[in-house]
Length: 161
Image (cartoon, rainbow, N blue to C red):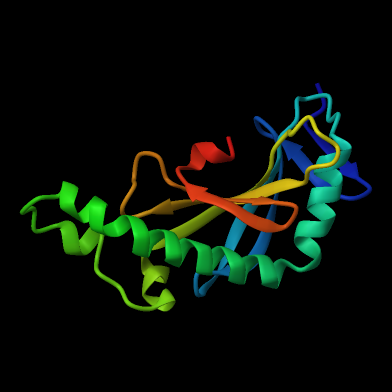
């Protein structure tokens, strides 16, 4: 079994239930170390769509970051009233699901962990996304899914897994 490779596009990767490497990126207001995950088996047989997605996604990563932050803010604004309602009279509601009015207030609630490039089985579709922890959904986390470099969906992490 090979546990590390140097791919012409992805660079140095290690196998850990997918091929991974670290990257530094400013996302949700803070420079962080994220893990890039290319979903593939130990044989490192990557799909052409994953390679293209990686190149296109990272080519304009600052735009991807801005799009992810805005889409997450819009998602939060839409979903947080229902999530808050589930807390009833619990005083922790303002800690986990505070009322916010601007995107920057969201930054303390979201912790990005990974950028994932899943298998898509369709060479014409590029898919990637951010996997994050978030205060309002500890169990399922937050996924921000891009298709062809456009935010397609924000929701639980399983939209990308």
